[in-house]
Picture 1 (cartoon, rainbow, N blue to C red):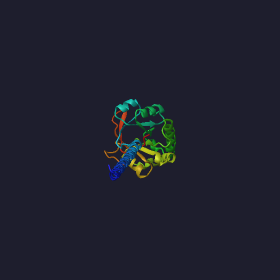
Picture 2: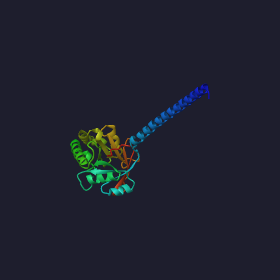
Picture 3: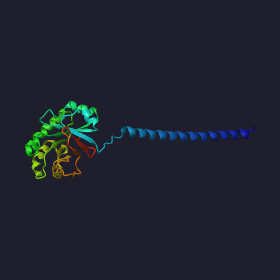
Picture 4: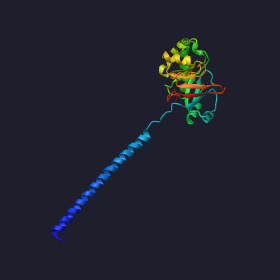
Amino acid sequence: MTKTQKISRLRHLIAVTHTHAGQLHLQLRRLTTLNKTRRAQLTQLTTKPRVLKARREGLDYTAMNPGSARWMGATFACRYLSHDPSKNLTRGEAATLKALGLDRVVVWETTATRALDGYFAGRTDAQQAHRQARACGAPHDVPIYFAVDFDSSANPGAIDSYFDGVKSVLGIRRTGAYGGIATIRHLLDTRRITWAWQTYAWSGGAWDHRAHIQQYDNTRNDYDRDRSTRALFGQW
């Protein structure tokens, strides 16, 4: 092989080496980019917040085995706070519900017409409801519903003072009401509550679209059926 041929061959080998090096570098860049993309996708999957469903089934009851509520398809339980310990939510029951995957919602209820007793009755009930909720393990800012267990359509303004009293303790962001459509509509319209739990009773088949919970069946003695209408409805 002549000297010229050797030089030509050497140049060819150098060119091939450069080409291969360029291809390897390009492949390395592609792999690096792919790994970054996969890492980003993995991070997104592991950090993506849990999607909350708006329409969920629940039960409200005075006494029931939490396991039975779960077996019946409930994903949340509306439970009582009151002067009657036999029907009240306890810390132990709240823990069991949580372990079973059921969210908890609390409602204060004593007598059916308690909301007619005025401002100081509302303040007193709100204070006691807050203490009981906290004793059950609820967060300090948990919403609390207050029951209006009668048809207020003739004079819905009669319950204003009571809810003004509740709101003075809890603030409007934590104050909710349970009742028929006239109760719910009036309290929302007058900005006395944030959270609304409407029963089909005293509602004439109509629903206020702003209600967070709908009690659509209360024909049984031991429990009622409810459904949420949005992702957040006062649960914890």
